[in-house]
Image (tube, rainbow, N blue to C red; front, side, top):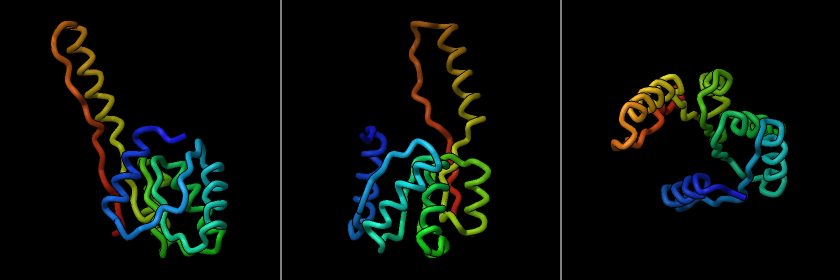
Length: 139
């Protein structure tokens, strides 16, 4: 079952790319499962040419599946989220099209700062924080 954030991402993709067809959605929890699920999806939709993932493991698994299915990763669009070293290296070589890299260090710092503020004034207003990201794409 998809969570709300995955559904919102899928809705945004459909709105931004109305000519595209989503042939399958999967919710893998690790790289091997992502590879297996994507390979299965490619067997059912051999013309598929893109994968949008919400974490590094899924992006890397999808990349492996496309390659295993005989597709040139430089000719498909695989985008991941996370920003781990392996995914960023794959973007650099062109085997992943792009990556939304989360800035965990800055996020941790802002969370600790906000918690300190809340502890100092428990009845004061809190702030909604956003995770800082950098979109990394083809050179």
